[in-house]
Image (cartoon, rainbow, N blue to C red):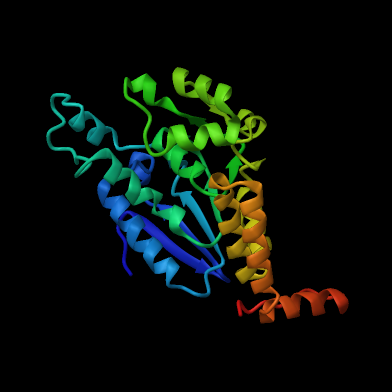
Length: 266
């Protein structure tokens, strides 16, 4: 499937989506969002996909919502020719947050600045690896607008209410080191080692049993809305199901035979 605003590549079970508007620092438009939806549908149908990586082309991850689009929707003069959100803000968010519908683990490879909605889409992934010189910020209030794209949902869950309040109220920009200390990113890597670090993490996950990994992801997020007892019931059900897979038999045999397992997803 051909795309104009994103790129989709595959390598040994790792599917990488790259925002491909480097001339605008990968700003987000409805057209790009439509392509994200199409790509997610394609990935969901791909039984060989084991890990999803999201990154940006050029020097930025994403500068957030396209400035011309924001200006037009705010009624700023001279922006009439810019794209609009094409519907409600919620419709715009849901295009990008389609990545949350992926059953496989997702990694945001933050290769550069991630600002506003650009940071939000990174937080929508399961894990984040940031290049050391990246800067990030929930800058919505600096534009005089309310945060969107799940900012008020994702941020408190990752850093706690008080820290989320500080970052959302102030709209300040911070560096990758602070993001790691806050728990926003899993690890920070030098630019020289960044691509290798992302690839290594993706391969490590892709080498695990794919059926079990998908079930674990489902269980983790199910826990947001259920009690411990309900989560234990769900885990017991899912674990029992995995015991009957070829992957479980292969994984256990591999440990007994002191070798690396070769999972098939069955």
